[in-house]
Amino acid sequence: MAEVKVCLLYSDNIQEPFMVNDYILNTLKRIDMLPTFPDIVGEIISIIDDPRSSASDLAKHMDPSMVGEVVRIANTAYFGTGAFKKIVTLEHAIAVIGYQHLSNIILHMPFIAMAKGDEKSFNRNEFIKHSIACGVLSKAISLRTRIGNQNEVYISGIMHDIGVIVIYRYFRNEWQAIQSLISREKMSRIEAEREVFSVDHGFIGAALLDLWSIPKAITDGVRFHHAPEGAKENKDNVMITHMGNMFTRSINFKDDLNSFNDFMSRHRSFMGSINALGKSFSSGEEVSFFEHIYGLLREVKGYTEGIIEETDD
Ligand SMILES: [Fe+2]
Ligand SMILES: [Fe+2]
View 1 (cartoon, protein in one colour):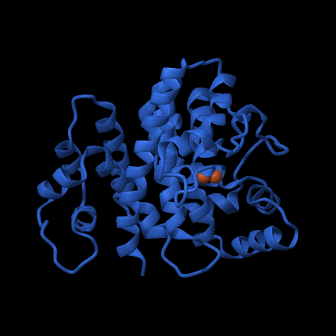
View 2 (view 1 turned 90 degrees about the horizontal axis):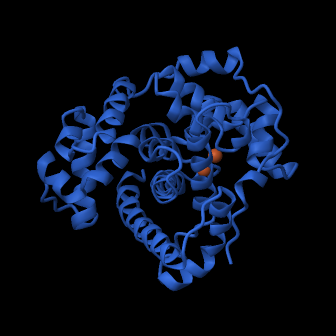
């Protein structure tokens, strides 16, 4: 049975205060990618927060590179990776992809842009799948437990590991040092990052999102996803993002999504983390929770494999 640690027990020697130093901050300030993205994220956050909003509201805020990406993904999702493309308009693409996936696609743009490269020490495909699944699961957990803001944790979930890509792409020496600590000293990635930077990738990713003026209710989820007990504010969002990450890490996308009964028995121990938050589900609610999550993960698997195949260059 897959084991998910009860969240409050998950902590590695926390050293406060967590601060990104000037060297990290100055490097983050020089990151010059997707200049329109920070503004667009702000717009998307308010659109997702509005229950009356629709896919066409999202579409109004997309720049041309995003439109191209959405049309390309819609073709892949619907017709496979062959050369024959039928979907040429954004409206048609949105109808195929749907509202939820459209926001996934827009929010993962920085990952696609930053994670180019062929280094074996970074598995971009798994990274994207993990990030999107974490957003979707964090939202589902928030919805069912009524803890945290489901739209905020959805975005923190998608963004939670952006610091890993930032380190990979913009701190090359440190990335190599971390890889070597992991392989030679058998450290966990978090331990190695704290050894090299004094902070982990949650803090580095959140510092970048702070520079982009993303609201703190979202960036705190990113900042503290490996150290939830360090959060002073937005504790509910932090805890749910942390749990979404822990649950996502326990999923094996290849083997876990072929049978619902197997999925539920493998992951039922996650209920321990829910109970630790003071929430309990009836057995009917428990089944419905897992059915919801199982359906979401199967969708994420199908649609990220569509994305990944064509962008894998
Ligand atoms: Fe992480
Ligand atoms: Fe993660």
